Image 1 (cartoon, rainbow, N blue to C red):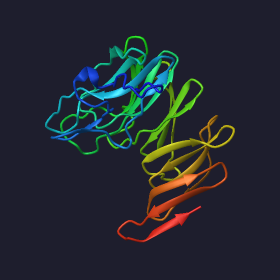
Image 2 (cartoon, one colour):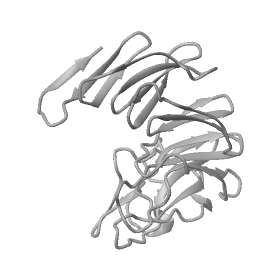
Image 3 (cartoon, rainbow, N blue to C red):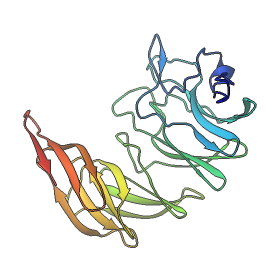
Image 4 (cartoon, rainbow, N blue to C red):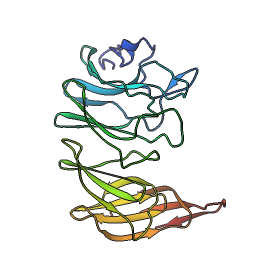
Length: 250
């Protein structure tokens, strides 16, 4: 944090950890602490800031232990540190809701060594203690994403969609896409009204949030590599499996 009047540096979230420059970090290598492009940005609320930080402990699997921290950004005072998130590959998304701070942790794939379980984690805004975790159904290949809808959180993985109570992390309902295969779900985006679009590794679907039945769906040739869209159009780039040829779908 800097004073805009004179450019003076006030404090950095890593100052308390003795890790030099003020840089929020998430991933770790054997020689350097670094962040990834997906690491959650700090969130400011009133005069408080919530941020992801490393503990400085590097383990043999290069999955740094991390913590969620809360500071008073006017004074730099560290207000609390969450329980240690051991062997966490990364921390994505920070969302503040009521009395909770909600984050998402990706799956570590086939990494051995007991990486932190993936999923949604909620911490108490006043104490930093963990309130709940939802992730047993999501699996080791979970790609962090969530869509907030009033007091509920939507997230999905491995061709299934889940609706979670934001207050206690309990599962409200789920929907398995048995009629078609979306692949590993990676994104949920609101479009209009009660509708949202869901992107998977094999295709897309438009759903109604009241009853998560598909309004329509479409698959692509190969594997979804990238996409961009608005309320009316969705453009998906398909990466051919076992081929260098790419396709575009609108």
